[in-house]
Image 1 (cartoon, rainbow, N blue to C red):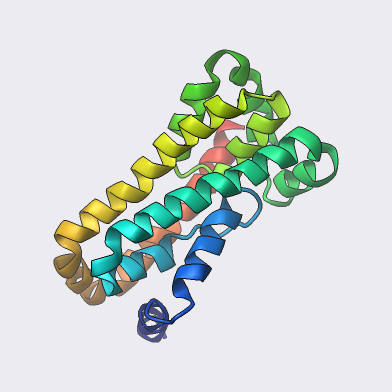
Image 2: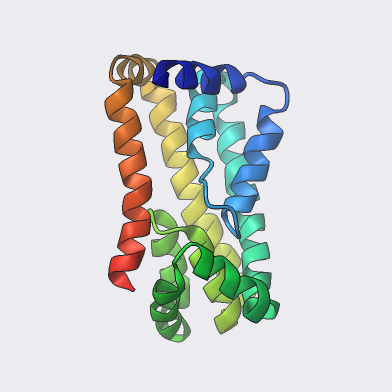
Length: 193
């Protein structure tokens, strides 16, 4: 079953609308969607090696623009939409703790938190609530999200074929490790909150 799912994701990576879907998921994950773009992004890096840098740019730009939506939710809609999103994913305590540090360390918090497995939507909504300078928020987001997506692109550009072989031979382990990292990000949020 896992092998079929893996093959489906890889085949989907070559679908004509895959780039649009990747951009949409990357956008939505930065503000309200719980699933990161990484599974599709990695599949596309493996399946579309010639588009590696285009995919990294797409994910960076759409993630930052999606972050603007998260910022807007925090800035103008926190009491209605923002609180609902954070409570739905159990991220309220982490948000409250993060909010206290923003006035002094906003730029660095955005950069550091955007590189960790902590859901980026917590950062974007918190930036809006605390009204972190929008230009500062945008620059920090481009630095952090660009680093994240270009680092993956670089790794898959240079090590893609051997990584694909490794993933296919150790699919169960890789799947469990990836799921563990995702759940660990949420767990870290709860532990810090």
